[in-house]
Image (cartoon, rainbow, N blue to C red; front, side, top):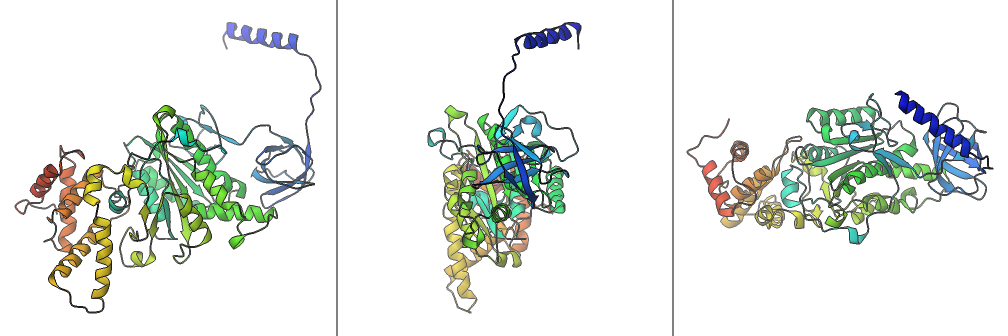
Length: 495
């Protein structure tokens, strides 16, 4: 410190001492009655309110979660070894918040913003409240910009727009997280900030997800908020709200963000565990009655803001688990009613080798079509309906029914489309490639191909698209001419 700075600090301290007047200060103080299973029961603190932050004398922290006539139920967010019955408690007098700022990009943090990657704590530019009202209707805009996942089925038949909430639903092990990771990887160089929230997962699964993002260069524009299975239930409960607070910081700056909640089934079970420990009355499937409100107030914060409010957006990809494909279970139906569409993964398709195992008949995007680029929307317009009709026709062939030539041609064309829609994970495709194969398919250029020739043909299209001067705004005639030229028989296909 320079002499002038030191002198200024002394003068400031002297001025404070000269104007200091001792006054009485009243504070409430409570005491821990019992503690265990991530829950603390406290007596005292008569002015405590739900979601107030409490600080214990040993350094532990908790959030008020339940109010009774004679005591308070709090969920622990940080617990030391010295927390026991008889520990004194006081109010923090501020809402639960997390530090926010650009320094969080590329970092792995817990729901309180503390680093888990062994590096120094990120430099924050402020704090974001975990509980916050969703933007009002007058601050919102229509979903009108596409968010490309790089997955052929989704970008063409089940499109997603920036600001949309699209649910990923299916049994465990069918690739729900893989779709979310592919979408995050595909945001590279697209000026979209990603937040990946991992809730209640094993450490091996957490490390695998983070290493996958790092190896594909996606961690540079991604924040991972982690509350693993061994974390306190309170941390697992607040994890999605912490990720949402981080995304809201960038959305308020006019940036486009993508947040993945992996997964909200685990989050709901954690909330059920905390509620039952706090002796709240159980409801359907033992979930408390307000579980719908918990998830709705989280997902309603995802939106697209209008220009007057910065024009930012938050796109949400919540993940939910089903048991044996039971989509009508309590938590899945809750989330389906909250979100703007769902992508349903089917175990039958997965076992048949169709990857990603997306059931097109049960998947829908209610508002994504409005955000889809007109060129892709025109090419994919009737494709979903035609594909569903093909599935019905194909069912008749299993009974040995003889079909006329036109029906046989439709079935062959449908099977060709099914082969095109297959895609390996971590291999996203550009929007130009999507338009190229749509043009080739609708133009009948691929009709004469055998299935074993299809992969070479698509590889040829992908290679040519990387060097073309055409854009999504080019006319259909230009695209048809280019695709015909690329796939002409006198040109050799890549091996």
